[in-house]
Image 1 (cartoon, rainbow over the protein chains, first blue to last red):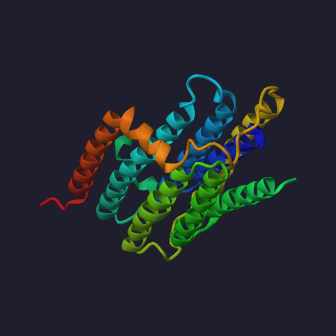
Image 2: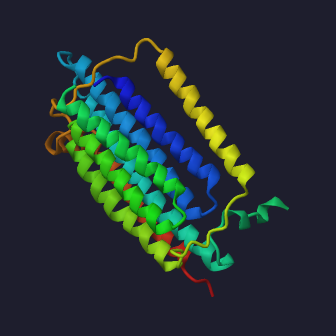
Length: 110
Length: 167
């Protein structure tokens, strides 16, 4: 496979995530769209790491591939922590305003 | 067109199609389940790229833990009846137009670019196996690994403190 198909797939997933964030009002759905965007970027990182694996073979430092995949692993770690805190915030918001509609969160406006 | 290409296109169609279903379904429970399908498709892509450790971690962490957490929250709030108020049509249209424009711009840049036909090493290369990644993780990246455990601890305490009922 060539790298451009993976770039196209990641761009498609990322733009679907953006459209979801812009068009939905449910806070949980918006959060899920952010997860879709994160996963698109992860997929692109892994694809690029495998692209560089073709060049890195035979050179002195072939560990660039492992470095990229460890990087993706840390992105997943941070995303898991983010989801825990974010869902706690959404639960708190639901308890206060009895809705997960993001349009109710306009207290900072005035 | 070999078997790898066929599997790639099937998984890509599955990922994009279920991601579209995530943002179009009215019922949040259906959205969560379609998101699980998306994550499984992305894990299939990782296996195709021979990044087996990431594929397994993606299934365990995303499709397992995070999606179950989402499902719990959705069911806790009793959102499974389709009561979500919709944005007005103009705003939805503007969102779709701007997202689609971004997609077109990026895709046009990709098509115009010359140097993007580099091959990818698909099913070979043992860099993504658990053994090699574990060696790298616990030799070169042991400090960030420990710091991420502190991050998890603070996220756990933060989640408990935020969602606690204050008296």
